[in-house]
Length: 117
Figure 1 (cartoon, rainbow, N blue to C red):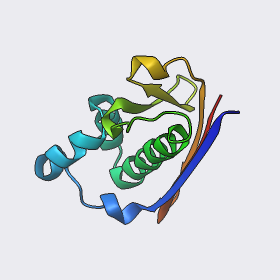
Figure 2 (cartoon, rainbow, N blue to C red):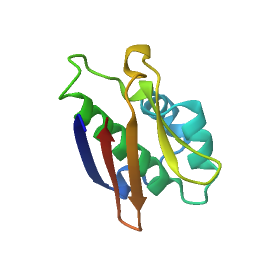
Figure 3 (cartoon, one colour):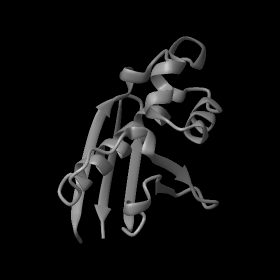
Figure 4 (cartoon, rainbow, N blue to C red):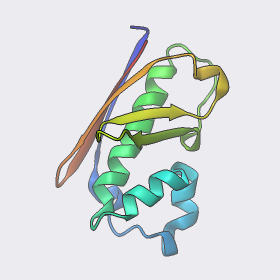
């Protein structure tokens, strides 16, 4: 293990966010794939928040081993066919690392934990 990162947030941060009204803000943080997934759900806020937590946890973990700031838009949180989540880092020099991710959300909070190997 090289580094770890964790983040927990209140889902209300993303409550009532819509692509129509908040698209510019959301597109600074999330990729098109992430937004498509989150807004397919009846309640996108916990899905958005969980992905935000995952991005923050990735940034925190990489801050221990990488000396450049990583924009959230360069970290993509996707799902495998089996429903598990994974990190797709859109920066070539970081693709050599294995990133393990666990996220969870409930009514009020979302959390993410990352291990970089």
